[in-house]
Length: 205
Image (cartoon, rainbow, N blue to C red; front, side, top):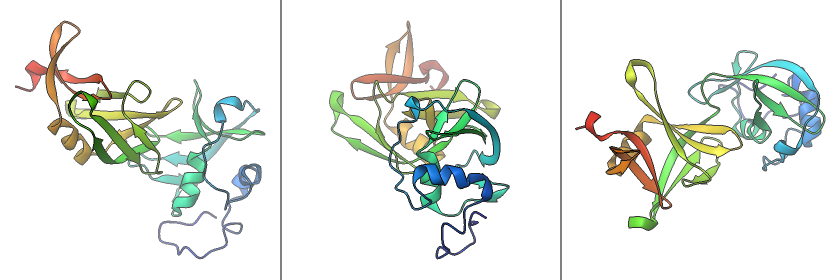
């Protein structure tokens, strides 16, 4: 079975492969395959049903109710993750299986800022080590959660997004400024020459 978070890291990955995932690992070159970006947008194999895998809102991946404790395996699965119109799927050239995602699949866990002024660019690293530069190709978006709490997200690839952790939201707000947008004053943040509104300026005064 998949190693839990409490398991040691010395087990043979081949022996740790759950039976339901054998074919996925085989198509990828084994559990020790490099978690490199895959051209999942070009793959359209037959849908083979759902498997008991879930990504929790805190970014933890579960298989059959057990946390997947090996970061290398999580990164490997993340490299073949895609969002189809109906569901999230793990996809290889030969099969496609559905998984459950509580919110979005990734967390943004680290932020860096390069340059300043109009040239300032925000960079985020996710919990699976994707690094994106916020701008036209990787925008920010903001939603309201329970109790009107602000939920910030950054685009990673395809239709996959990462939610910023609460500390990163505070860091982002520290960089915010007011600008006119859509006919009203908005509070937001600039990156790579683009302004991303967070909320109406009148709601935060």
